[in-house]
Image (tube, rainbow, N blue to C red; front, side):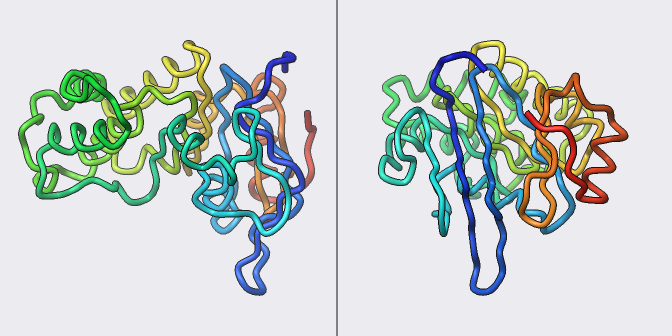
Length: 241
């Protein structure tokens, strides 16, 4: 990492839900130009960590810095610089694709909301369905609309929770191009997926969680598919940064 301020810097973060500990002493950074694949078995803490990064869940203990400021104290400014894809699409089913994106562009304070909506639809390959209601889209096309909403305001960081859900091969290529463009432009990406090979194809860095702990954190080129799979399956502590 260079001397530049990281997009995210998480230090000694714990998160409890009642008696359940979802995150245990997690330390993670995200620098410009990084695509981090956040991997782990079900219940490992991946979604909780993503929600923490996106300021949707406040940690029980620890520090979350985003863009050099305390993320929780500066939530509106931090959220304005993040694009989020969650398990739910968060679009309005009775509105058309264009109407959805124009609405969100207005919420983001964009002045060129119609133009930006059209550009985002073109980027995800939905321009032919621009005037169709979201309710008429298949699961895969709805996920494309969800991706369009996430990139609409050209965020510095994309936080993507299983963004490949429902996507066919063409849809995955759209997602891949979004990730490649994001990091090529100096942005950052954190994503989860259960498709290990696909995640490793996209990632410049790999983090594996097991039982709420980071058990692997290393550059993609320094780990093998087998060691990543073993860390996911066994939770053994691997080489770290």
